[in-house]
Length: 525
Image (cartoon, helix red, strand yellow):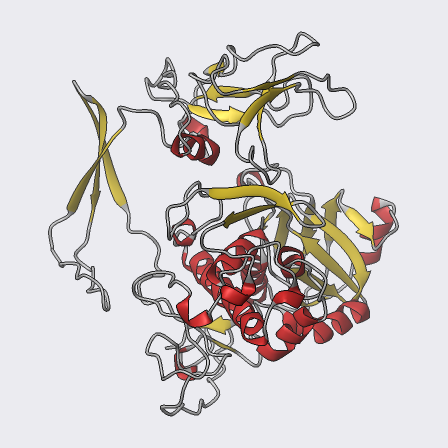
């Protein structure tokens, strides 16, 4: 899911690379809808053709203004955007390579992939931005107290639903929801009315803090998954307990939580006793002494008042329009307020250094040597030191066992104690372990598992092999698919075989997967 931080970065990219005042020369696409009513594609294009691009705002999602009209772009699960890329090289990531919307301006071309586009009025969009900007967790205008008040109004709703409500906390997605609830020590099914004022303010702060971490990781290209404690993990990042995965809430969204670390009894949760995210970070508690892990106002990233671009704290002027930074009043030694931002000194928000890989074979299997230069490595604050060296560092990865790219579900089931899978087959052309994939295309094979070549797309061979040949057949005589129980209860996390047909055409075949055919080949779904 492209959550608020990703949408904010796309908005910054548009502001910095596309000049205002350009007129629309041509528009292509098949995803034009108005709010609530389907419109003809040609009519929508005709309304925008010749319009002048006047700017972009972000409120969880993008709003591109063209005079009296505006385009709302929802990036969905795999949406992406490309600016001024050659038409033959504008692949849309994991999804379709055909853009759903292509805007040709006087000097620039913007393409959107796997997204939903709505045509709206600019006045309505402006009014909505002004009303909800202080609630947007990605916005520099975010107001902590107003966000807490907005959450408090939904007393009878579960936290997992309130956090995902874009009218309450715009920009929060499923990743932020799960990690923020873990950081706050709260069970997703807890209702707002059960929280004290201190717990509610702490939850809002943890949501904002993880959102900023999300933003910094996406902006710098560093891996966000290294900060996950519960999301798509089989074991808790704190207590190593089993993570419960279920569909919870009004919209049945996937929810990950630890029963040990996230309690249902809010009376036993004390903010000062909550775990830290790592050994270098301590939570900022209200009323405490000054904390050096809490960023001061002059150390925060700042937004240009002219073009709204977010700049690094060390920048004296805006990177886009060169507007000087407004003077900042330095804070004294008083305790940090609830609006201060937690910084993460253990995280180097830089792109990974280039590595050279060398493959070689031995009697023990295939190994890969990775050479990287650590000559610029610096000493980590309050942690162990990382020695600098002018010689390249060498580390070895042995690929004798199953590929670790087989998916999070396979790893999760192995850690839950299921029988381990056998070594995946090797593709004939490259002799490398294959990858496990799932059929997503609609048809009789949807949901089935298969092996394919693990090489990049340009070097991939045509290797193909079904991975579920030992699964039982349903009453239709078709191969079963393996599912996982997501409902809360004693069977949560167990695998079972069921009919692969869609709802309404499924037969009543059911069989637990433990010890059944195919489990020794492939656990998990």
